Length: 493
Image (cartoon, rainbow, N blue to C red):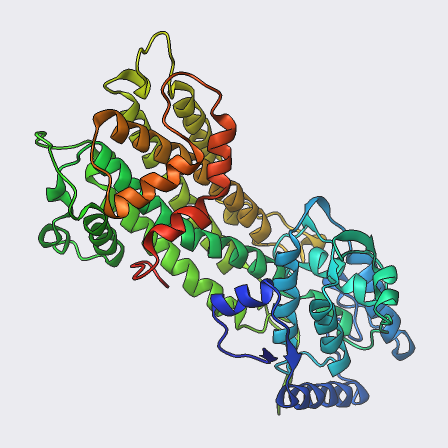
């Protein structure tokens, strides 16, 4: 892929995250060189440029002498390279490097082409900075984690290289590469942006897009296991409330259940079954919204200040990640909703007969504790779904008085997603057990889903240790159940 790219899609990001090489196009190089010339001209005229010939944050009124400009940029990286907690997966940092390089390649930041090319060398040679998850408040951008990335460019910090964590300078030497000397504005342009938050959310959203389809496949399996009343997915009824997600969900359930027997005599089912189209459909609307947000952010210039053609310096707040933070909070609520309704279906399925879906219950406890685990995880998701985007705390002597807490929001979302994966795995196991105990036919899409579940968790004839089986299944939800509907995914975005 060549940059700058102005119409990035999530699939493009995923491709780079997985290893696609990236280069700076001749057009991009020219744009960057023009931006650099504009910056140098402004400095020669003595124009004050934030973070170039001034201090940073609350120190923005402090003027910096010309002879100290380059040192200022190096000091910025050194002083801002903090972090705590676990480290990001290398894929997320690959994505962040790519997004930052793409934004810089649009020519509004005043950096030299060498800076962008140095970032792309890290990407293409698979030298990936080790970056802590905790530390960013999401304004001014992701200062701390982006500084940990920039640290590698000047030969410091640690990297993932050939399967090991090593010193950055060691990896650079092995690749015959040299640290770069940062000059005016380049340190600031490397760290003043939302790219780590954006990459982290994009990484999770790519999985959430897949997980939503899986949640609906498993809901369909449960609906069949309970022989739900199919009038609730009659499209004539569903179209009377014409939300896209509701219609897509009902259509998929009809497709899953096509050709399968329906023996229900109930007048109405519990809401966790009857309202699957309405509840899952509402969650789809949130996921669709989040996809629009992430693609807007991926194509944005989030630096500050920017060097604009024919105008000069424009100072603003494009580094603020409030949109990403709120989208993550909305997703957390949507995924918590899916976990809660799934747990209710598990509870209902385990009501039997037989109780806890096991023969000789009493002597055997069956799936009793599986529902307890699901309830624990759903309860944790409730607590985690409190919005991070409204937990601002002022920083930098109140100069940065309202921040987005975007990475905190995404980190919570990631934990909610992981909990939901386990809850859905439990629901699938409970549904498969109910289908087998009831002797219901298994064919078509239902048969495919059932078979994938049973590959990991065989029929529970009597009590056995099934914790590892369910955990293994949860870890493999994407490659297994993703195969059950290979074409015409109604939720493709």
